[in-house]
Length: 67
Image (cartoon, rainbow, N blue to C red; front, side, top):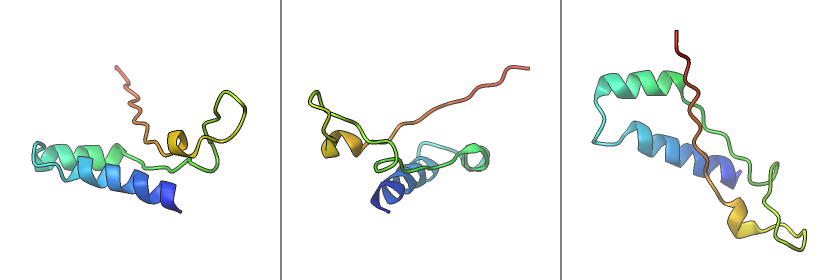
C-alpha cells in the first residue's frame, strides 16, 4: 500500500539521518512504528469528498512517559 510505503520511507529517513548517533537510532528504532492511513483515515474537503492530496500525509506522534 502506498501510504504504508510513505510512512516507512519517513521512518527510514529518521532512523538513518546523519544527525543522529547510532545509540539514538537504536533507541528510536525500538520505539518507533510506521503506519499508513491514507485509505483507512482519509481527509475530506469542505464538500465531504475525499481530498486525495491532503490524505497523502505523514503524522509523527511522540508518547512521553515521565517516571
